[in-house]
Length: 266
Image (cartoon, rainbow, N blue to C red; front, side, top):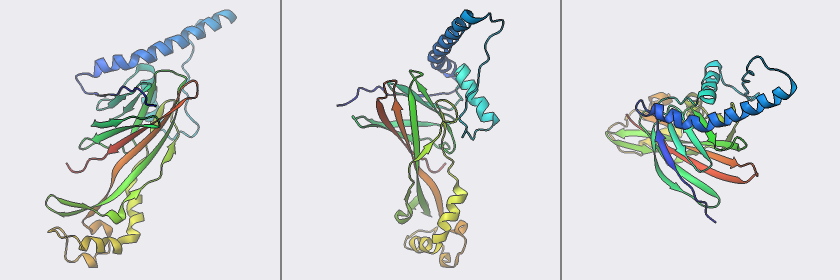
């Protein structure tokens, strides 16, 4: 049985930032005001109150967020503040906000098991350690998020001639992300330095594969190179897969898969 879904994608810029801020703030203001009214009602039954209750900041014990990141989250929670150059994907049960990201929704598919959203990343943008915000329609909703990074080794063989070495394509496993604060998730870092160290163990195989490619950028002295940084190839995260399990108040589960195609070039 299919699900009736409504998708909408919005980008935040200088011109529509104020309108977006107001539209995003409305559900959270209503939720926050309801909680405040209930709290004041309970307190009025027990004792007099001469000052407003403190806003308590709640973060997971495993949170690795620094002071500036926590401040950013608090601003979003309290004021529905959204950084410019953000993208918002509006779904039926919740919205997805990718901070400091530019791109476009190129395709979507829905079925009873999983809904898939395809994103085409804009030039000079990426999801490297970016903040993802899930904005539910209900405060009782729960989420489980996991991310997979796909890695490729791209060879610059000549002018407008690039080749991905198929033998060195890596589909990273889905790794669960712990929410840094309620509904806020820090996507994993690409960590290129570690990836270069790992793939350097296969330097000889990489050189042999590159020598099989014809192109004016392929050096004849490649076989004598002993440093990966001198090889005409670059490691890059070609695709980011974000799997989101959404649970409503009844415990019903729905899965969404965001597939982000990374950009290349300038």
